[in-house]
Every structure is written in structure tokens, then in C-alpha cells.
Length: 254
Image 1 (cartoon, helix red, strand yellow):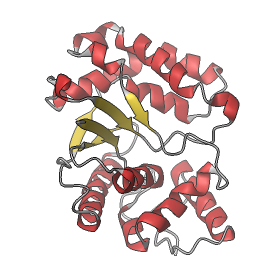
Image 2 (image 1 turned 45 degrees about the horizontal axis):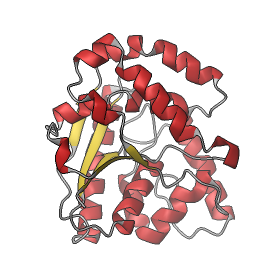
Image 3 (image 1 turned 180 degrees about the horizontal axis):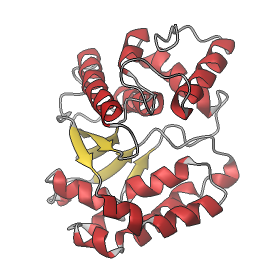
Image 4 (image 1 turned 30 degrees about the vertical axis):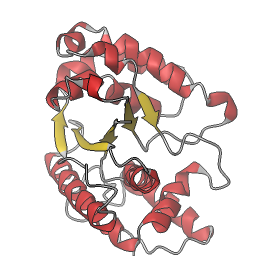
């Protein structure tokens, strides 16, 4: 079976761990991986540049560690999301804020609404060659049994987003976008709660060296500011991870 994975990678802990786990778990020699970096306008230019450079280093590190499993891994693609998308999707953002889902749901709608747009940029118009196309994400987590309808609701909102005029105009393969599956390693209950699972998965599938190429700061590009939400969230995860017996040394804080 010919599989295609669109891997959304940001150089953060969650997407790095999800990427590692996907590569490690994959047993399909025909699987093709397309790592994608999405450029978020709300971050500083220097921070975005830092993230992109780190993504390239992460990919190199992972391919060197798992050469056979990543032989069909494509070059990193950078996608700048048109600002018009922000305006057109505002009502869906508002709907997700009122839905009771965790804050990442908002980002999920925005990312998934650009699926067809991504396909055109990646020149994957001939999607019929793939038996299965999946979006690999690391940001979905902290799920209880009653929230397992997340994917169903996400697809419903994705369908709504794809009918927005400016998105539809840029999307040549809307129908296939509705049929995407998701690779979401953190969409489940687990004895290790979601916030610290990325650290444990990095410990299992790689080592501390890979953490040098991860980045969580929203503002700085040289040294982490240690004040923004990204830095604070990572610090909280790391402290919990160490309390649970984690052995990795994170250079971000050490």
C-alpha cells in the first residue's frame, strides 16, 4: 500500500516527538513523508527563521538515526499561510473557542483548513497514487474518552473551512482533503499524561542531542526569553517529566 504522510513540524517538542514516533513505528517501505513547516505571521521574523533552521536540523538528525525508514522522506517544505485565511476563518475560530475544547483546537482548525492549499504547493495533484493520506500532528492531546469525537468534529469544521471562498479558490483538490486521516500519537488516554509524553517519547526513540534542535520560544531567536507562553509551558513539562523519573537533560533549561 502506498502511503503519504504530511508531517506538520514546528521544531517544538510535540511535533518533534510525533515525527520521531511516526518514523519509528512505520513498517511500510513505500511510505512517503512530506515534512511541512507552516509560517505563522504572529511570531517575529527572527523566531520564524530560527524555527525553520531547527526543523532542517531535526530532519537531518532523524534521517541519520533511521536511514532505512526515512529513505522516502522529502525535502522540508515551507508554507506561508495567506493572511486572508485568518479573516475568513474567524467565525470558525470563535466556534472552537466556545466548544469547550483545549486551545490547540483553534490552531488545528487553521492548520487543517489549508490542506488542499498544501497539496497544490507540494504538487501532489495526482493523489490517486496513494491508498492513504494522513496528516501527522503532535499538538492533539490531553483527551478523555468522551472527547474522542475530536477527529469527527475536526473534520466537520475542516469541511466548513474548505468552502470559504478564498480558500476554495486556492484549493484544487478539495474532495480529497475531506478524506484525510490523522496520525495523532497523543490522542488517547495513557498512564503517562499527554503534557510530558513528548519528553518520554524523545527519550525512547532518540536522545538528548535532538533537543538541541527544538525551539519553543515565541519571541527570541538567540536565547529563549523564558517568559512567553511557549517557554513557560516547556518548563512546566520538563519539571513534571523529571519528577516522573525522566533521564533526558534538556539543554533548553540546563
